[in-house]
Image (cartoon, rainbow, N blue to C red; front, side, top):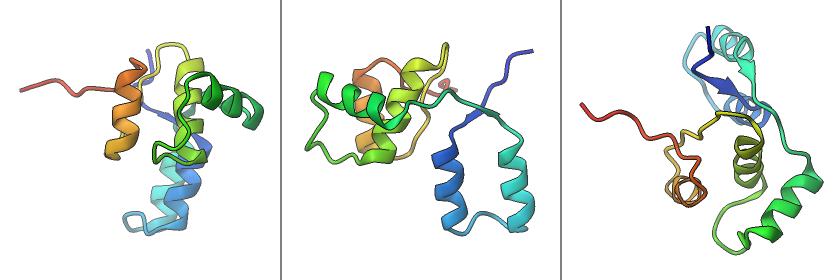
Length: 101
């Protein structure tokens, strides 16, 4: 069976920095059980940034790492509510588009 959701460690850490749904510990533990995505290293992310000329477009290191990591994870798509990140993922053909009902 294929996993439908992967977790990137930076997303998990960002959620931990905020206030995930209660009970906090259970939510964070459930997220930690998701299969991890492949993760682009900082040098890989910087190379990706330069090759795709993504600088100055309103996305930071975490966003660019998510994009680069999605591209190196076979079959992965990026699901985000962040408009800039979603636009970049769409341009790179890695955006998750939920099915229309």
